[in-house]
Image 1 (spheres, one colour):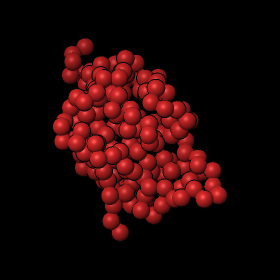
Image 2 (cartoon, rainbow, N blue to C red):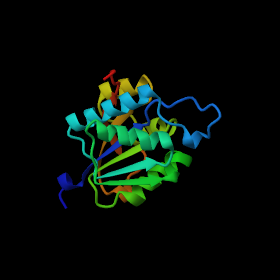
Image 3 (cartoon, rainbow, N blue to C red):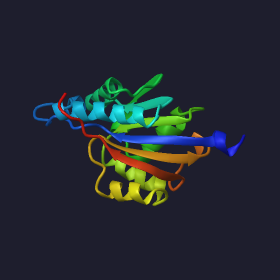
Length: 177
């Protein structure tokens, strides 16, 4: 297998802005109006960048599901979405294990999850490698609707801390339609 065919892209996305959780279980919190706009903008950005995931692994939380739905309204697309409680409940290790187990032969995987896991996982996987500009942007904080685009050369089953380079970090902000 040539190294080119082993090139992989992992996109880690933090859900868009959610409503305050007053009187509602955390798992059931929905997106705020701004969150819907920002998620749609994230979908537009993914489309414009030509980033089409073969697989989306999404937390089971309502706000992450809605983030991906709105991203699709903005132009994002995938054939397969898997909803994993491990991305909602787990930290960096458990989320990474989910990617190892689920990604199979895919080339591009997008994970829609939560902080602090998305920020920690990005830092642990990249270990400072990649675009200085992207690391500087990430240093400002992995805010809602943030997307980290990581490059990885290898099999998904072998992805580990320090094995990726951060190619891009983008924060999507929508506008009133």
